[in-house]
Image (cartoon, rainbow, N blue to C red; front, side, top):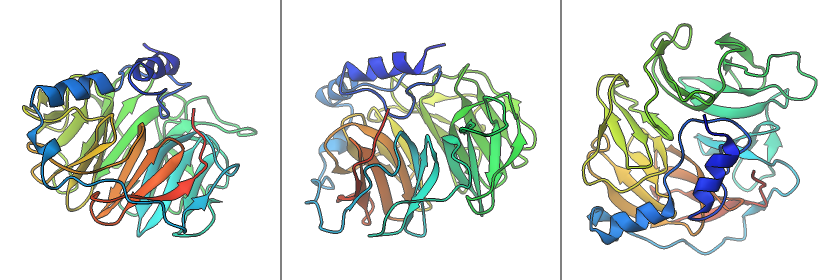
Length: 313
């Protein structure tokens, strides 16, 4: 088991301390900038220099300063153009051009966050004043306001969650276990401890799972029972599966997309700095980088700041 401090230290060797996993246990370290640069130098990611690449757009006037409102951002989500942030102080949201506001009635530590159909799914730790065990297991909410435990209460802290239909997969922070549920989180199957840093599940085929590792992305076609390396793929850190593409960002901030389940990748735009979280819905893509959420509405080709002044671990 490696502490979050250890994970942050590994990533800091290339860029800066990791935002998402700091201060909590995890079993897998993120990919590093040096590995990404080595992959490009060896020509193993030809699409990264392709004609679809784009530069970061200039900062628009409508960027909202969220300084002092929410800190320690762990993850992002996008629903109908509304930006959601899972933070150390609860779930927050931001409508375009408006002030960041708290959604969850309690300020629990939202370590894992995803949408499962029409409901929210999360995991993490209790906030101040909450009568709850240190590990919240799988929590669910119809509106992001009121949350109820569904399973693994007091047993598991998921730092990664992804859902497709009735299927939910997650990575346990303390032992790196890959857990899968096919009944909306009521019961779980332990599929071992593959060295995954992030993961995503196909929205059309829940048996297809893609993950990131320190040696490059891997894929599974049996629901996560086995994973195999994706030959020729760029080194990737974070994943987000939209209904029209699988999005990814590498440790340098380069965005990549795949429309064939991760087998081949095309480079899109890039953002300068350390990526710490990624979310996508349709052509909307949100990236947390150096205390700001960079946002794209054209499938990751160009980005502009949407929120600034955000804190991180």
